[in-house]
Amino acid sequence: MSELLYRAGEFALRFHHVLPPLMLAVAAGVILPRFLVRSSWTHRTPRLTLGLWGLLVLVVTASLSLAVMQLFFPVAESHQLSEAAQGCFLTSGRRCVAVMLNDLERPSARAWAGFAAAVCPPLALALAFARQVFDFRRRRARHAEVLGMVGHWRSELGATVLPHTTPAVYCLPGRAPQVVVSEGAVHALTREQLAAALEHERAHIAGRHHLLAAAASAVGALSRRLPLARLVRDEVPLLLEMVADDRALRRCSRRALAVALYAVAAGQAPHAALAAGGPSALLRMRRILQPPTERPTVPGVALLVLTLAVGLPGLAAVCCSVPAPGM
Image 1: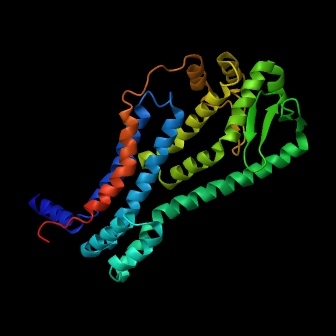
Image 2: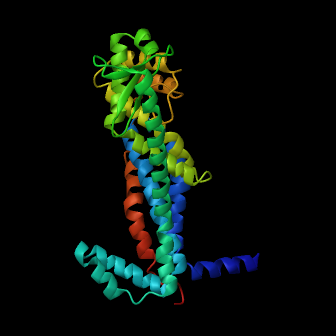
Image 3: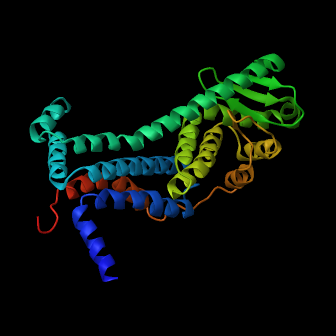
């Protein structure tokens, strides 16, 4: 036991500059996501909650990049890098490169490897996102071809009508977006209810929600064990539906939208589409008919996460410049 503690202390002294960003990554990737998903106010403010999930993803990505880079840096070079970075913040953007070249001594091969390794987390996230977007476009183009053959445009609805008896309403976002309605939905819904469902889909298109959904899928594809990745993949699509519901309610009644969701809940939509129904319809119907009145317990909860996202990376950079005891 004493030997284990000795080794742990030796590691902490040797890699003390890695611990701050690593602890930040654990806080933003494990602790805060579980707190956020258990908070009852998140469904009341879906836009704010989406922003908080995005900030947590950015914090984890930046923290992992910094932690990986610091593993490659000797402590002395790490201190120089931190001082040069602080100099960049105090100067204009044009002088940042000059500050880095003047303040940072010639980096070693190990330091260059650290720079290269630091690019890996954001690069992996960017590649995963690009893959999701490419897959979405491929599926969308394939489905659009089918709609061109079997569907017909109805100008009074501003949508493509698909000959199918099951009520369904969905949209194909992208460069040439279109809203799709089945004949079953046209016959099952009243004029007001159909207008509410169409407004929901147009909200998806206007908000470019397919890009946020692709980003959430990309984060979830990178890691199955990290709570943040798993929860972002599950929560973001639901929050996007709630955002579209809120926007549709600006032009329709709560009852009309709720009945429309009930009617199209069983409708199937392709993977490249965003549908008004789906498995979350019951939860959203309850939210629409009985809007939550509970406010965020403390508005500072959001402020806490924002502070964590903005302030702690700078704190971690400062901590990296603190020499270890005995140096």
